[in-house]
Length: 103
Image (spheres, rainbow, N blue to C red):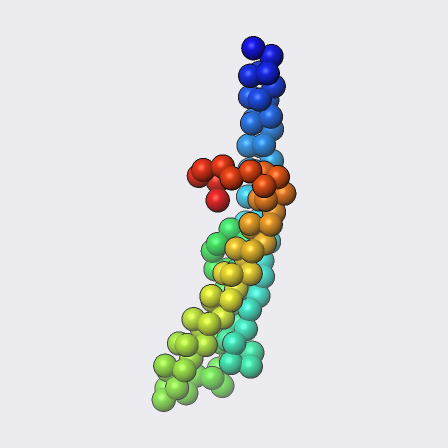
């Protein structure tokens, strides 16, 4: 019974640590740009987008498809950076355990 109790305490402690890391990740941001800085995207490390900034000089109506591609590129870069940080931070808590439903 003692080992089960110990395991339950460890699981509860890990859950608390995971919740703390998730809260910290929601506050942590990364930025990515495309088009030579014409498009800047800020993403949170919880997987959400915080901001998209477009240089007004990049907004020529004839270049709408180009601007759309630049936004898409910057968003994907920012989300990839955020995902990498989240995986690293969560991996520190789980110490390499592959727990279903956590990541």
